[in-house]
Image (cartoon, rainbow, N blue to C red; front, side, top):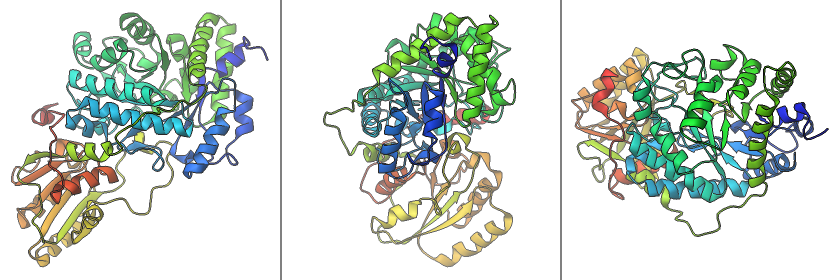
Length: 520
């Protein structure tokens, strides 16, 4: 098959996903026959570190040069690999440290570890702003809500990833942070005017593009009325070619977000969406779950070329951009210099933000951690994930590792009245001890808000730990002690535990404006 064959070109601008967590169980023959421009690895594909390294090596051998091997490893709640790579706190936790240089260090550590495993692309960092407290898709994945401050962190982390040895991808252009709707399940719309978007949402992207911090910009499946009221950014020439290429001057690879997300698949459909995105200016089309759908899209691209609705030159240009990036990352080149291996825990400690009162626990007192947790809708974290662990990590476990006598009481995010009643009956019987209440987006769960208020009535000195987005912090003005940690992954819980037992000082600053949350 000629390199100029339109079907080969079409397949070469598609990044595919697959099932299987080992080189033996992955459909390598089918992938090789397809000849993708990239392959996206999800949690479902991650076995042991050794299995993952062998699998990635097999994926690299699918073509010459190797296809781009991509993964969503942002840190925080979106992290497909649990072992074998540097853990990174959520972007918002890094924003709370107010130290972009620390973000650059963590990006370099993570990029190095991914390159050592054979990856060539990390689909990070998120350049969106945390402008919508009710968002379940962005939230702590954003560094904050201030455009300039976020831009500094986006630049630092992206440059760190590329220094570490993998391409970085800015997402989700031109911004997904001001909408509560999740493009995994809906087609969000942003109604802000162009001047507002240029002064706000576009700023982190514009800074990173000017600094050449990242090799890829990933599109959002979001309609922005100011730029194109009829099509989401992924399918909009006005957004991808006129704004991103023309106005902002980006000359790297434009990648789509997954075209199997409902915002595309339940509107025009994945196949039509792929053709439209390519025509609009996208270079790499992500179809992340079904290889047969990717093949259908490739044939639809060829049909569009043949009937003249898609210029062959546009397909050739996209293929050339993808091929140039593949060539650049054809062989892994992990960063070989010295790096601070303590930076992740340092970041988690420094992120702890005191909103009110004294976070340190009283010496010698037993602790009861009341943890609100469960299966909140988080499709960004769950996409392509493996089955969840039997028991989620807890602050109580982290405290016990530090010599504190501690127990945990796990409560659903939206607790039934009977559960709350039993909990409230139990609290007075526990006597003199520390109560630590770890909330989970209580601002989205009315029953949780009420339950915490009742807990505070019985234990007014309880420490409230806002475990996810910090918008819980002002919900209970009667609370004497409130801190924010921006994530309940083990690293963030360890950082919080170190602060609570006095091993570290809380130095975080709020990366979002809480006073505005109620009126947005």
